[in-house]
Amino acid sequence: MKTTLLVAGLLSLAVASQAELTRIQLKKTDLTAAEKMQAYSETGSYMAQKYFGSPARKMKADQSTQVLGLDAEGKPSYGVPLSNYMNAQYYGDISIGSPPQTFSVVFDTGSSNLWVPSTHCNSIACFLHRRFDSNKSTTFKANGTDFGIQYGSGSLEGIISNDNVEVGGVVIKHQDFGESVKEPGLAFAFGKFDGIFGLGYDTISVLGVVPPFYSLVNQKLIDEPVFGFYLADAEGSTGGQMTLGGVDANHFEGDLEWHSVRRKGYWEIELQKIRLGDETVELEAGAAIDTGSSLIVLETALAEMINKQIGAVKNYAGQYTIDCAAVPSLPEFAFYFDNKEYKLQGSDYVLNAGGSCVSGFMGMDFPEQMGNLWIVGDVFLRKYYSVYDLGKDRVGFAPAK
Picture 1: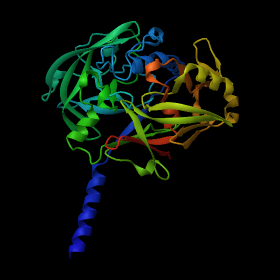
Picture 2: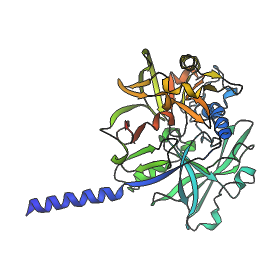
Picture 3: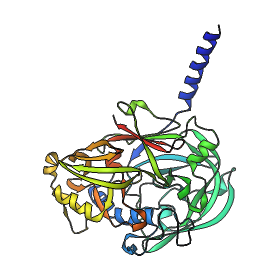
Picture 4: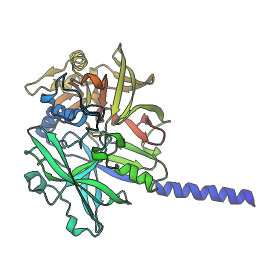
């Protein structure tokens, strides 16, 4: 009798656990060839702002205090990563307030804050996107703390607010988030998404705001402090899926390979070496796994070497392009995380922008204090299902299917 009850109890727990796995369907941007080329050309400015806190053209070797979450005085200096949105391809819907107001957001492992446009914003970009109206929410609580982020030729300004946030059918109570009240220039205007849902560590959260995933864990809304990403192939009909509270084994093959986080900020793991064809380069580097980036970003000299090896040349916009006909014969590229090999074919690391083929390897000069860092984006994550375990500070990969 006790055995029967025990088995029944375990089955009940298994069913409950499965019910707590939250799935969010991801959509893909539908960009024209020209928009894709523009997106790739502006990736450098976006990534510099996101990881360094300043535009790429202003970043010099001696301007490197705003790294690893600290400014010159040792205080947190990370800001909300406010891209022109065309650099991230995958997004999904959330809602804020009561009754719910829906927004499309990029689920971004390279940042830690939730941000959407506000009805208080009079910038052109805000009028072209859905805006949060606090007056229409019965659960809204004013905070009013100001935040400002430098971007390009201007600054994005906003306020911190508090309300209920729904993601995948689960409601987070009393979540702090950002409302933008000023967005500079036209770069934001033509974005396909409204905002960003940060999934990084709380150590890089602007103003120390508790990230929404932490709130899911703290409010016991999910069974495990784990989320997973399946990003569909660029030519596929669907965008993919994010899971909260566990993983979806329907989207990967075999067992997950786990890698420990080396610095708690971004989901950064150890990168021992890379291989291109038969040539191997030993590294002492970190790899920040970033669902909010389309490309693989690395130190400029090494990027130039790789692009030369695959026959990619710079065009007038500074992008590395390659003859599309050469893609099937390109050498295999591989990452080695904790000595586990992850392979990419030419068709994985070259992006087809409407007949123009762009290398997925982009160079950028990183500040010395950041060490040797690679930013590993969707070029890699389409090939491998990725899992982020906040409880055990580790990232897992398995071949996607």
